[in-house]
Length: 483
Ligand code: BES
Ligand code: MN
Ligand code: ZN
Image 1 (cartoon, rainbow, N blue to C red):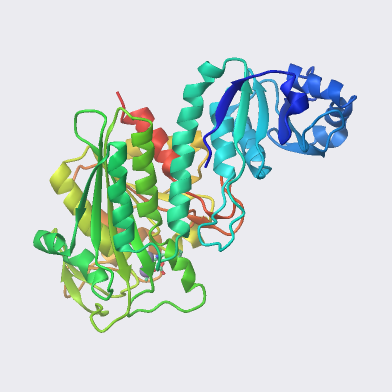
Image 2 (cartoon, helix red, strand yellow):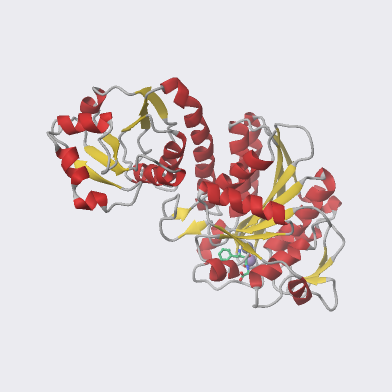
């Protein structure tokens, strides 16, 4: 992805730019000077478009496109409706429109005095396609050239947007990558490469996890030829106790011996979505040199049926010591996360822990594809997460924890069952995790099974992997874990 560039707005360039030119207009206000120049070049076409009733009917941030406008070298002139008094939401939508229209040539976006960050970020977030598996890729999308009054002044905003967008794109690439290409070892190797950015990376292998007693995590991995890995990434941009972010990294989830039905099983290549968001977030923090102390942990395993695979009915000892009765080998994510949560709390004594996981199909039934489920044992942390999500425009909704759900997973012969049956499937999954969080430790579990991969375009992304969570957690860290 080509980083966006800032240049000083030169009205003469509007006539000569050969790709797409983007201008902004409010039907109830005089045309801004860039729009006025395009109007003069096109002999009044802009004013006629902006004065038309269908332009007035556009939602703020939406636009229309004139093809091969007379008097201009441009292939297309995109006119975006933006009220003179704009909100961040308008700017995000405008950026989304800019990104959705992006082709292989460069777009010259006449921001003039408009703030650059939101538009640049959302243009880049929308302008994404996954071509790594194409024999003949179309090649990269064109660059965004932001024409502003103060190019030097806009540079930090664009750098910030680029750090985030690039990290969201990384998440999507990871989630799209098939399981024969991105396996536990290649993912761990890619994570180790992030040390170039100043992240401290440590990778634990099977023997080390065995010594630590992570038998729940290892039980999931034991049916696979791909060895389990636990990757730990530390960004120490500040002193003090860290925030721990933990991601479920099931590279492929067949269900194990409790095998999933064949139809749609190929989607389970996205079951490492929580790990991908964790890695993308850590990269974003490093790129923007965040003044925060954050540790990312991802547990990488593959859930396969095999002669050595765990069986339904098996009982495994977690690192914490609780004995887990494995009712269903397809409820594997919680087995991975429970050892990670205990380990992270024990070793790093964090201020708070947040896990991300494509944990349950039930959260899709409850909330659909636009809101992630937020389970949290601390009202202040929950409010901070929901506030951050709403500030960046990612959907999130609080879900309950409670004693009823705990009772549902009590085990007769062990301590806890890994499933509680069909009722409240997402809540019993969260309740299972809650048992592995020490008393008093603020913790949130984000069930991203619905939002990680979408069948249609979502608020910030084209159809496919969304990268949901990088923006929310980055905003949370800026607001609550810096300075
Ligand atoms: N990875 C799945 C959850 C999932 C489903 C993610 C659909 C994305 C889309 C998880 O490991 C799983 O299989 N959960 C089971 C739990 C059940 C066996 C208690 C489920 O949701 O059916
Ligand atoms: Mn599963
Ligand atoms: Zn899974």
